[in-house]
Amino acid sequence: MKCRHCAHELHQTFVDLGVMPPSNAYLNHKSMFDNERSYPLKVLVCTHCWLVQTKDFTRAEELFTPDYAYFSSISSSWLHHAKRHVDRLIQERCLDSNSFVVELASNDGYLLQNFVQQRIPCLGVEPTAASASVARDKGIEVKEDFFCLEIAHVITEQYSKPDVVIANNVLAHVPEINDFVLGLAVLLSENSVATLEFPHLLNLIELNQFDTIYHEHFSYLSLIAIENVFIKAGLEIFDVEKIATHGGSLRVWVQKKQGKEPIKPSVNTLLEEERRFGIESLETYTSFTKQVDQVVQGLIDFLQNVKAEGKAIVAYGAAAKGNTILNCAGINQNDIQAVFDAAPSKQNKWLPGSHIPILAPHKLTEFKPDYVLILPWNIADEIIPAIKEQVPEHCQFVVAVPEIKLL
Image 1 (cartoon, rainbow, N blue to C red):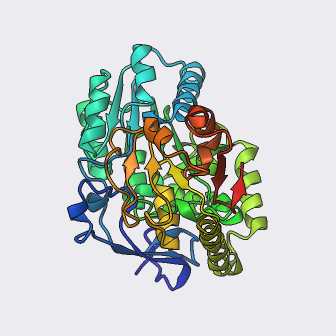
Image 2 (cartoon, rainbow, N blue to C red):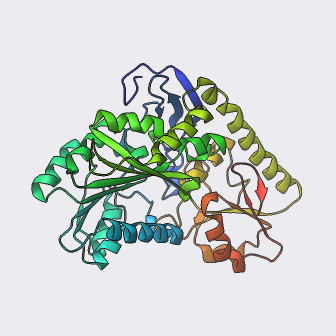
Image 3 (cartoon, rainbow, N blue to C red):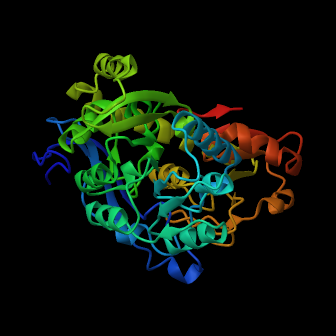
């Protein structure tokens, strides 16, 4: 396989998580268990440009199906994050009814609804029919397609060049990363900017966040790697911020090369931090498998102890990251009775691979668990207050990443 960015041959493995189904491929019926599709989940690193990427086994169309079950609006903290970003953009970019905003991978309208409320014209680009339909119900215009260079030309011809382009947690989901960024370059004028958010590779490695690795993520991004991609497309990063979402992410601000915004010191500061950490050092990547094995074994040992003590454990949050760690550890319903999730799109289905049933949160009271394993550990602070009244007083909450920890 060749690197998705620089086309150099890939030889170095970052981590091999084995064979498992796509993390968002929830099962509607027990009859689907025997015919469940699974694929290898192997991640490589390019030692030329340092882009970390999954080995080619699946196509985006097989992963982001019309009934794709992820809806951004389920998380209240994510909604607050989106609104704060919109408010800032409106103020700093002086956006009004004469402006035009485009969001790539707009999902269910979690972010663009804020522009609609302010009567600022906007357009979402979203490939999954279920999410696009929810966004339209909020009054958001949606182009139902995968964003690419071709779609960028269609948008500029049918509408105009936007003042702001937003792309939150989509760049890692794109198999053709160069084509996507070239499309972004087409959308941008000399006066416009783009903001992109993505989980930071440095955090993934340092904090053992291997559960953010799944088939839907084609790339795992550092600033060093992504800067190369933007430069090749005639773009430049003029600012970068560390943000707390998804266990530690970056927000990069992008413009046309030699654009109007001065390049802030934050860019070089973070590039130097990544170099000191070892993003351009092979040893950083060769030691990661050992870290993963320790986390997985920690979960297995914990669940075995729970069973040996005769205690009951359930999980909360049918998140993609949870499916990665459950399947790596070979967990099933014999280990965890059920998983609870607030998203109606996931309820009364089964987790891929582990086949643990997904139930609505109000059914928690029927199980009286001794432990609740919070799979989306990054929003544990949001989840615990929401469900604390539905579990026994003695019940303890636990996360498995970066290590087993009682909260």
